[in-house]
Image 1 (spheres, rainbow, N blue to C red):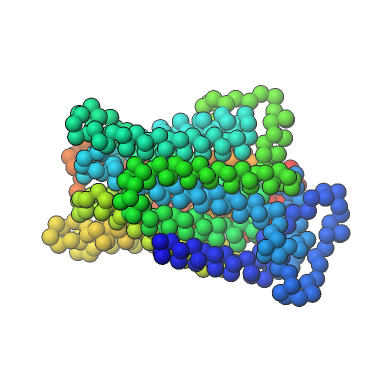
Image 2 (spheres, rainbow, N blue to C red):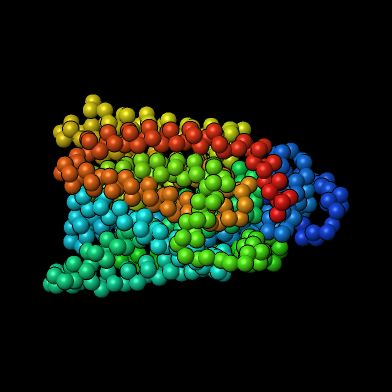
Length: 544
């Protein structure tokens, strides 16, 4: 609990530090009088540097007035007169949806080590079988596609808020019911062979579902943020917002070992389901604030619906729309390919880590604690980047540069991991747990911090369909298909040549890192600079 309180304190201090930056670096206020001339909303001078803190972001990081339309509302960064404790509607909506996303990640970070431990349990799951994990991962894409089709149907018919409610409540219910069923079956597996089989495949299905649902809900939170913030605002605030999710994820990961001792792994799943359900309350609050103050992203959806005579909500409709988006916006197709390669590498490192941990740490509770500590450390490192480094560096380092740096780092690390003379346990001639864990941790740290920020910044200057439908197609299918493709490859190789050793698997990680570098460099040539993104954003708003 001390660790959790410390992380919470650090998050508050870091957030206060960000919010107390000079006025030109904080979030702006909406002007709700659409007919009011811009000349009437010129910036007011502040009589005292401590009398009032404004929550405003200027377009050029100086004192220039920026105004932009989102969902029919006018963003005027010059007119901001609220203090730290009197947040503007825009800032309050952003904080609400960010907190909702943080609770979503808290729930996911409780469910992740619980499901991984259950999956590798010799009594309830599949033990330390080297083929079971990659085989299960191949089902992530089909599961993700089913979830995506359901999301697309609700989004097209009822709008983004209803889609968020339906998907969040559905996923929360699955975690709750699964936890209760596993708790019930746990006492029966020793005496009933049927109960053991049911439990085993229930856990396998839950593992696949947990891997599939997270990006579906995450993308909806980010779509809201991308719809209400300008490119300059997003470059400043997306990293700290991601930092909030890292803090809650770290807190959950630190607590999961203790919770599993008190409640059992099934009890951890129940808690995760409850927390996920609570996150929906804040999501609803965010949309309510946006609706009340005239910048609701749903307005764009319903306006588009009015102008459309027919709406198809089947899979062909979604696929056709996705193809159209990729054709209109080549950057999104390049991003889709980059995600496939990135997630392929991440999956290979994940398989390496899970397999090695299950061999080295055989006790289920101890293994759950180790995994929890691993992801807690990863999220702490991500928080340091998100709160302390990225908000500053993102103002002078272009996104294209960061897109190139990440795969270069991982290529060097995987070359080290694959080297027979480096990072190897001499007794087994396989990579050591320490070397594998460090490589996987570095990959996840960059994914959670740098890459997440860059990914979300791509969507800000784009249209509604790109932000809500294109983003989900890329986020859900791209992320999960990359995992499934890598897992399917491993399963095929295992079926053809037998069990693949960790040494041989480490060679594949180097190839995957090289592939990621190629796709990331191609994407870096397409993403706009900060100035270009702001200009594209203004042009898009003029057409709206």
